[in-house]
Amino acid sequence: MKSTGTCPKCLCTNLWHVERVANNDPCPPGKDTSYEFQLAVTGKFHLEGAAGKLEAYACQQCGYVELYLKERLPVDGKYIRDLRRPQGPPYRG
Image 1 (cartoon, rainbow, N blue to C red):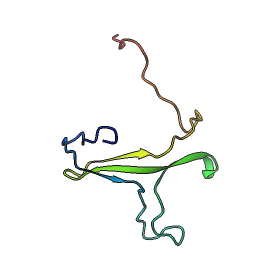
Image 2 (image 1 turned 45 degrees about the horizontal axis):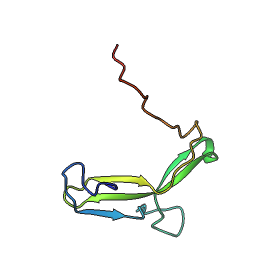
Image 3 (image 1 turned 90 degrees about the vertical axis):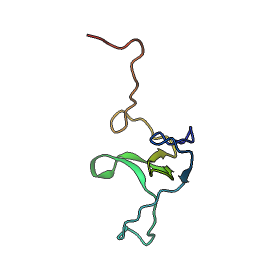
């Protein structure tokens, strides 16, 4: 939806862009009741890993939502791996 401006589910072109996806937890860990959601990738005891802020695109007609990272996360090979489709023709056994 972000690049096409069209909902892939119902083909509607009336979308909402939510720049800051906030958590609505009634008991947040601080005084701020609307801190941003993040895609959190954490390791043991939350001492390793990465986190990235999210933005959303939502269809006004059917309610379909897509989330996107606002920044790129570092590929470390352990918690975040780079997956790519193999090049060449499909394997047929």
